Length: 600
Image (cartoon, rainbow, N blue to C red):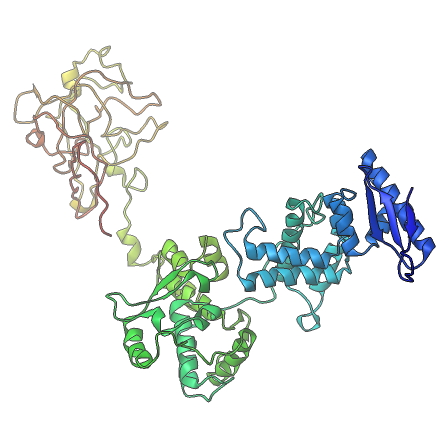
């Protein structure tokens, strides 16, 4: 049983003696009132009994523990009368926040943290979490619920900016900072769960964004630089120094804090490719950065930085963070450039977006643009920084083809559609097409040639073709049309067929060549079918690409254009261009040739 006593001759506070969960005697400082000290001893014994039985303390007992001094709570936790979560539940949130900030600076706040946080970043997270918890009047962990946090953020978003309102993105930042704080409490064993797990961030839409930045147009940037150089000193920064501050921001996309950290030794102006660099301690992502400089900029910077000490700050008179925007506004006004338009505002950070928008407008590859911005992913670059400049959409529309002028005449059909009837293959148009002087008048299916009474040689003869008179400029290039399955009335001149024998009009019939064809002639009596081309085991011959056939039957003029040599190369890709009704021969390459990408 707990007991209270006061040392002899003492008129101060009583001391309380009790047994803990292990049965050991403990002595703590009580109150000046004896009854209050006896009540304290009774509660401590109840707490020890609950701890020994493995039970959760009742609500009144938990409330009593939360009312104890912080140093006494620390002793009870050390003696095993309070577990980590219960002890943390009685500890003020302000002390947890201080410990969280220390963990950030030590680099152990989360498993995703890459090294110690900077003082600025740790202070920012600490401030966001503190502001949110003070807004809901939370003193201990049990005061924080998902409902009161959600209502607080919704109320702040409903207010105007001058009344302490928050934009949707800022609201999400506050919520993210608070979630990170409670996640650290769970990992540290100070809480059993994160009370904000089910609080979802706001989906950012253009209507919800209150602070949208816009890039400067080329003429606006030129006007700003000229007005700044001719303007007075603002916020203690001379006109020439402000001119170079804006110019470097427009040409390097450096942030305000990064420009503030620049010294003379950060400029490598005598290098073969001059650049400006920053160590990881001065960048946002803690990674060293190197950004190239334009030749005209380098020549002017040499004269300006010649007399500076290597450790001297380039922009020594640059005002504080929030004053930089106020310094830019009168310069914009002097240049007659509006600060706010329907497209957004132009603050100092918009100069960084202006640089990236100019690079995107110049056709810079996306990966190069991402590296120039030093972003972890290209989505951030394109979503928040690269904007469409004035006139870019009109310029894109001007590059579309003329659909009713002379530009349409250059677009010629490459398939089997939209062509004159006299340009089709023999079986698609019955009138005015080449006819064969063959004993066979039947349209055979694949594999039916042997069942026909006509010899195979007559099926493939080319000696008696009645050519139609087609103007030279209207002839369609054959042998290039794609395979069109399911249309039985069409035929292809690139069909695979076994061992072809061709007879010239002035020579006797004789078989030519063996090997594998690049282009094979479809027999006129064999139509297109839905059947798959059989896998012939016989050898094939090779036909050189030497020109077109006026008869629209063969992709060559005569048998002399057929090579009898065995092929040594694999079939190339079909590459042809229509230039004055002539086929450009495809480039043959052996299987051992390595393909290389052209410099373009």
